[in-house]
Length: 233
Image (cartoon, rainbow, N blue to C red):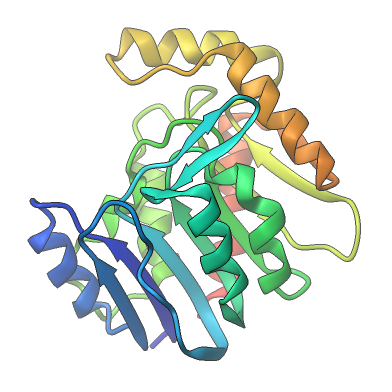
């Protein structure tokens, strides 16, 4: 069984999600129901398989992140600075969480992976609500990826693999196909970011020496499945 830490921002309708995450038997589960503050993490985690943060929303305003998992960015960065530990993978199911990649990558060893949202997220971590605690998070996330209808340029789910230098964020929500992807989101009735907004996220990441690489659907699926299932056992 994987060793894991889960931080859940619980909304009014999330009782089933909380129960399912509890059944995944996390070593640490911290949940909070207020919108403004992340629940305090007081533990030194040591080395765990993964950290999952889910349930809230993020935003990117005036060329910088303004919110993370429903906490204002000042509180969020203070919370991140108090995290102690190393994780084989970090999974951030929060809109625009890629903007904080530079803050989370130091918690990964070389070869560890960061799964995040480059733009408005689709709530894909809701797929963890399976009630099946005999499977690893890698297997569960692989299912989410497989079942992600038409995963393509509109999808915000993205992946960074920790390297000694030259960090890269692989995303389907970038490059020449970005406008096509945003149009696809609009046609599906999903929340739509702007090309300029996402370009500003790219520029923000460049400050942390993280390059954004547009990745086609099949290649992104393979990167996600290979890296999640090999780093989390």
